[in-house]
Length: 128
Image (cartoon, rainbow, N blue to C red; front, top):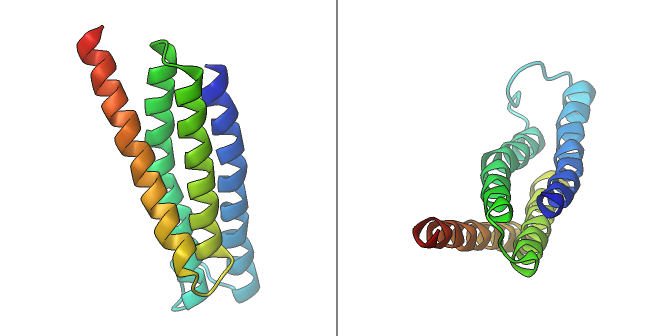
């Protein structure tokens, strides 16, 4: 589980950064709940929430693949692409007003990781 642990740790740091961006905006603009009709806050909340919606499942799939003996090369490929995709997406939502390439490629690469990891898990499950 060392490979999945590496990417879980790195992605945890990204998630912590996104969390701090939301907290800072809440404090600075005195927003107690929700977005307070603040467009910047809404973007930060969605970037943070989107990360929380996709990353845990991708890491779960990676952990299952690793525990089943999948290739380290596959796991590093999935983990590396997932990390890059979430950096692109998080930057687009939390650090810019509108950076379409980061949002688009971040989302696309995340879906590619989920698709490949899911197919690999199905294959592992059928051939074990």
